[in-house]
Image (cartoon, rainbow, N blue to C red; front, side):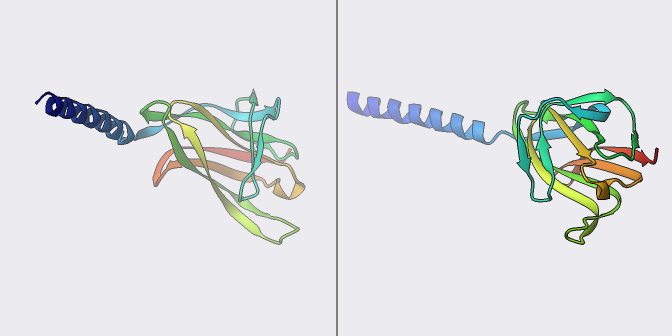
Length: 168
C-alpha cells in the first residue's frame, strides 16, 4: 500500500511539472503596436556587428541620432531612420517582425535590377529598443522623394515613418 501511495505521489509530481512546462511554452504572445521613440539622421558611432541580409542590406549596431528631422539631404553617406519599441506581452519574448521600405525607383547598375520596395525580417524582444535605418552608401541609391519605413508583426502594421529626401 505504501509503495502505491509513493507511485501515485511521484506520478502527480511529474504531472504538475509537465503541466507547468506546457503552460510556459504555450504563453500567448500579444503584440499591441510599436512606439517610435526617436527619428531622423543617424551616424554610426561603432560597428559591433555587421550581417549581410538576403536583400543586400546590412544590420549595424550603435546608431547615434544626429538630428531629429524627416527631411533628409540627398547626399552620399547620409543615414536616416528611427528607433522604436514593440509593445505587448510577455515582455522580453523574442518575436519575428517584418520591415518594408518603399521609396522612389533606384537601379543597381551592376545587376540592372530596379526596385521601389525592399523587405526584410528581423527578430526583436518585446519591450526592447530596435532601430531601422537606411544609408546612402552608393551614388545610385541617392534618390529624392518620399521614403517610408513600415514595421509589421505578421500582417499587422505596428508603425511607420516617412522621410522626404531632398536635393541640396
